Image 1 (cartoon, rainbow, N blue to C red):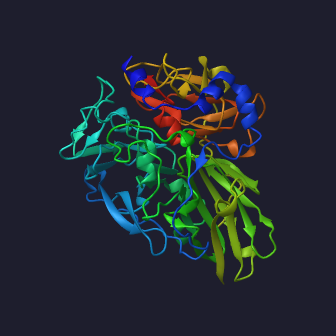
Image 2: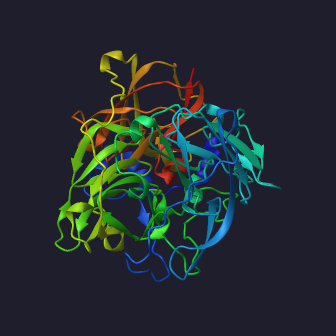
Image 3: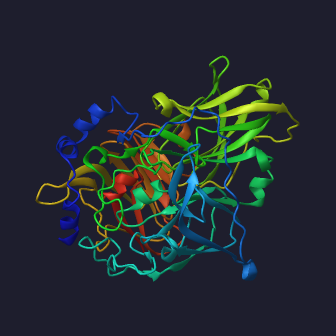
Length: 529
């Protein structure tokens, strides 16, 4: 098969082959070190001390038109040079010239059209992660926006590596993506989704936030305005010349996909960025703050906790939302695990601290510098009329097991890509092929999916949200509540999820959101009929 031939070129090494042969036995060994799946790059430039750089807040993009009941936006994808580390210039691929890209704020049920113009040297695809989006605008990996003068082949995967997809819809230079946004208010994010090159494109900067709001949520009295902070957390590493270091087999991202062998399980950086700044600090009032957390890392997992630097005590906080919007009721936590692509909505009450207190957001899964994330300095006393009501929402779906018309099983494991012994990341024993139909579901059907993993796999479903029914045959975790679109599977773990397929017919995807796994075959086609 052409797909397997192309994938063999990745030359995935023996470590993954051992995992494939050993199955969950190998994963059980890995579960003794569950903090990471992947290898860490070490920066070759001096790194700044933590909590010196102010937290940037991404600019909110203004629509270019609001006629006909549709808000229209324009974004140009282009390369810029910016200062991420103090005194160091770094080349970035960006949406609109910034990293993160500009934030789009929209209203529930009011359509948005975003016109993307590709001025980068390679094809791109835009996916609105968590969006309930028609298939034509969902960002299928072969629906490329080709840059001017592109000569990398019609499929856009580089000379000698093209994959045939008879259904691909490519456009030259620009493409309009239409998002109806008929969905619960929540934090979404948009990022590149190009076939085989999603991981390095996101690493270079192609990510931004999209917030959906509605009247009911705004009437709750949650912290708002300057006390609502979007926090995009991502790790990176820097080369000696200040560029973002990434172990691509082809640094031009025009030809051969994949990464060097030590990083096949995932690429981790040694610098933690929040909204594009290294270990930043933010001055806060002594009041409640709503923090909208996104893990935009390629492969790094976090276990986030708030710590009073003065006495070292862990600070409790409230979870009020998950990937797809508000929970039914707040849940108290002292720590929160966050896998790649997951979002959590939390409220932290800084009024309990004296003015001058430094409250650190730490990563309990990190070591050395990656144990720190950012800090909040309580700067002043202030009035606070916000609240966290006991009932946050009443519109969460209540799908029951008895409603499911079928149950499906999927394994997410390393395995052989072809007869010549190449290895990669597989769903149900198969690498991704856009020309193959993997799963067909009927619009309106309720289904249960049982997922099992060898190592860490954050599994993301396009189009729909789901509820987590169980983990390892037992009850879900305390943070698993609400409506999700990404479930974090730990090494050797199984989980059950339930969903109703609603929204739109067409071709969609489900895949691992460890971006290196995704690029090396761990995606599958999903046809909604």
